[in-house]
Amino acid sequence: MLHNTVFSTQPPFSSIEWRYTNTWIDLTNNLVSHNLRNRDGAHAVQAGNVTEALAAWFVGASNGDLHIAGGVTEVVDQGVSIPVGLCDDDMDGDPRPIGTARDVGADETGISPVGDQYVYLPLVKH
Image (cartoon, rainbow, N blue to C red; front, side, top):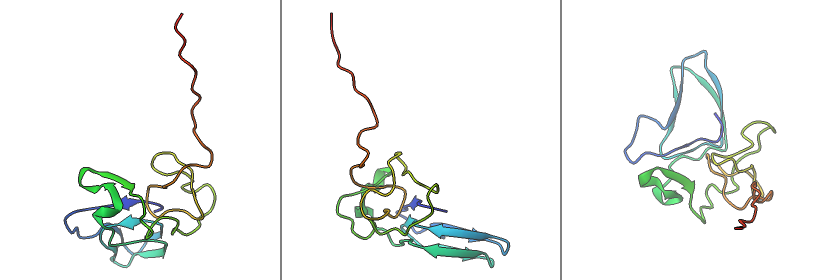
């Protein structure tokens, strides 16, 4: 599980969980408001995860906008490296990383070094 964001205003049993002894998972660069939970003998390799995310870290957590707000140093450029080809884009299709390292969670903040992905033509009226 790579680069997920899970936010809840009410404490859930867990934000992300993995279960059963035959489960092996890589849990990397996830941003959650509550805990990560191992259940029933499951196995996980964890790296770069951030728990206890605050509503203020998001543009609009109360209405489901989980884009990272400006100035959240706890997650911006704090993710660990993962192999090329695994989660190279964020939830908006922006490339990772933008900055010195990947951001933790589903959103990569900043201005893409690639620039605008669209071609704009002038509107000409005849």
